[in-house]
Length: 106
Image 1 (cartoon, rainbow, N blue to C red):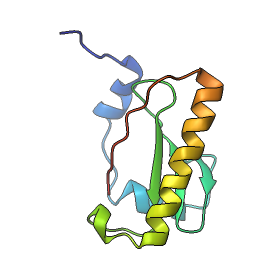
Image 2 (image 1 turned 180 degrees about the vertical axis):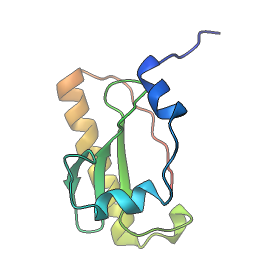
Image 3 (image 1 turned 120 degrees about the vertical axis):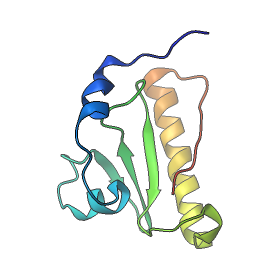
Image 4 (image 1 turned 90 degrees about the vertical axis):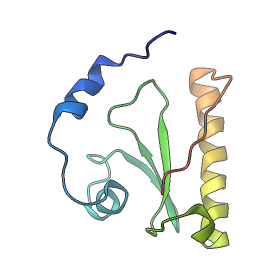
């Protein structure tokens, strides 16, 4: 088995973690550039991972804090998928990416 090692993540793993929810606090902070928010939609936003395992790690999150994907309003879920498709097109163009892993964190 090959180990996945991203030494730039060590700073993140070893630092004291702030209180609160990153997905709620970052969009409300008012400084999108500092918080790596690259797009805001009506009910969802796109944020770059500050400590990615690899290039192109993008987070698409709803503004609403819900516990489960099925609790999202249909409009929010649709907007999030539209944003995922937009990001995939951008990654294909920018990185010539040929595969994608999608995961859901709410």
